[in-house]
Image 1 (cartoon, rainbow, N blue to C red):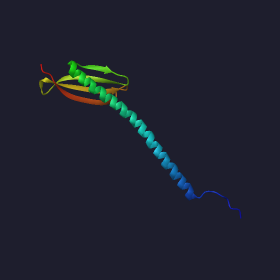
Image 2 (cartoon, rainbow, N blue to C red):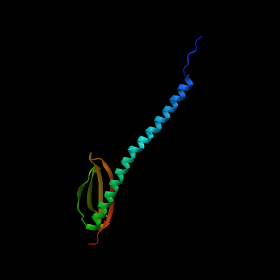
Image 3 (cartoon, rainbow, N blue to C red):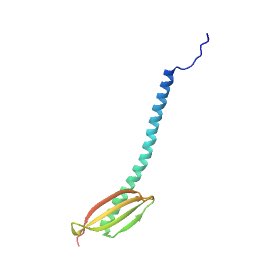
Image 4 (cartoon, helix red, strand yellow):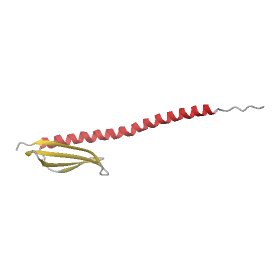
Length: 113
């Protein structure tokens, strides 16, 4: 009787389990790389929105405008608020190149007129 050498079903299942685990760990690492890019872009938008807010208060430019950057744009609107004539509502909205809303920010500005 000739006996053939080969692997058993148990060995094959163990090998498949190891390969699956390695594949899943790799996919998680790739997924984190993709989400970190979005995080960097999000920080960039947040920082620019903060800069526009400070610039509006410092220069006292209380009018609507759209500021275009590479990869996104910020739409600035200034309206009177419900809290009185000396309080303005500053609304900043950031959109990407496909006009999807990235971030939105609203704040009250006291104007001593």
